[in-house]
Length: 128
Image (cartoon, rainbow, N blue to C red; front, side, top):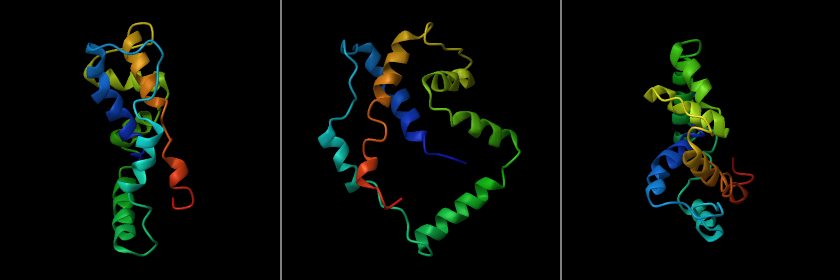
């Protein structure tokens, strides 16, 4: 299973409470460059081949691969769409059909949350 987008999705959902307070007129990312540069203090580098973290990572990978072809696998693949439309479709599991037209404020929020996506990547180049 690919879990790379969990942070983006959870950030967008968690931050939806900001809608109650309103958003600034011009969308900006939630974090400043100074804040995102500190990500390397929190996120560990990729595991070294053969170490305990690498072995645990491989065990999780093999366990997830055992789900291939199942309904859960198909759901995980559909959850991997991080486009704005894809993230709005993710709310279907709650019985809600959202579109940019029907949920303009949530669309703005998702767009704002995605502005800083990958900003910490430059600090980990070569280690992933």
